[in-house]
Image (cartoon, rainbow, N blue to C red; front, top):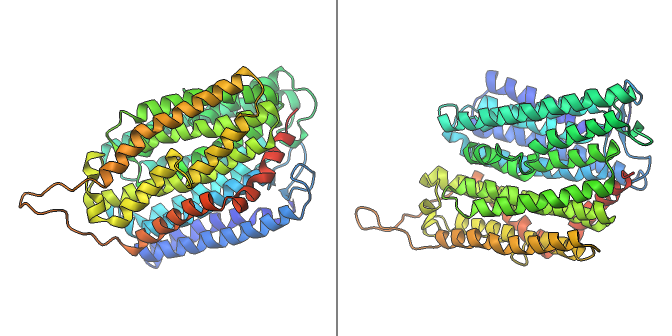
Length: 499
């Protein structure tokens, strides 16, 4: 194995850290807060390694050039990791959100208590995600994708005494396994024609077997990306998982699978314009179905889950416009919206988790009066919902504004139809975000003794990640420049993969 060791450092930190955390939990201490701190240290080390890798990528030349930091063996039978600019953005989002979720879980997991398995699984989930994003050969991509997926299946069903959680985890397992089998079949088709699995060596016009393999990846990774009509696992999985895991699933897992889908399909020679057209059409389904079904939900986490499907539609529309019309800024806006969704949706799920932890609130009606009991949570939850709705000057508004300005540049009927559906769905989403905000600040119901709601002191372990995410939602909206600069090269890189 040769190349830049900085490429593999974040992955090594997480894989080794998961093993050490498990040993510490079994033989040293099983205290939740200490394990959370140890896990946070592992994630901080991985973030530091990622920063070093980001510097290496910045010094390596243009994002579309041949100087992308790599590690492994390059060749027909090789295994290679490459740190492209888009992968680094998604990895940074995953590590940052994972760190906040870990701190949050130091108190939230008091409801579950199986600390010795939760933190290693969380680290392995993020390790699999990073490997999947960095993998340049298709078999390594498959193996890392499975690592991520298996950890996610277990974490969704983590509350094993809850039958609905087990059902949701099993449904996720079945759907995810179908996607995995389809991806594996696609790998076999590509190998049959080319004799190798290295994406960067897929040159020339793809033959029929490679095109069929690209179609298999589109379907298999489309399941993991919750692309309609392959989305049916998501509402149950997000609705029944612990809120900390729902934040990871909704904030970064689905998006990482989607970015991988784009990279693989383009690398296998899927025509850029055709892929962009397909994404625009599918985005209309995601937006409309997600928002339409969210309107009729009474369970808060299911509402947020359907909102994730709609948000994926916005990301797909932006990426589709960038690919179909060769607009790098539109692809950049899609990556920026991934960042905005990770912060806003992560914040929303963590706030819902606090409401459940202290008040047992699972339905929207049960959130009534939360502002009187936990003012911080009500304000933060409202900021998250307003950001998802696209209210200025929050992060979601900036992301949608960039999508709007780039979609206007499209020069045909499909682009204008996509723009019209996008605007209508943005208005439709207000129909469930605003009533939910109103419920949070509604007067609390009187208890049996005629008294109002009591004030609740939120644990600092939970408050700190929520305050941090709330500040990020504001910062990204008010000062989008640095965040746009971070995602700029990703759009250039994706379009450079086109044929």
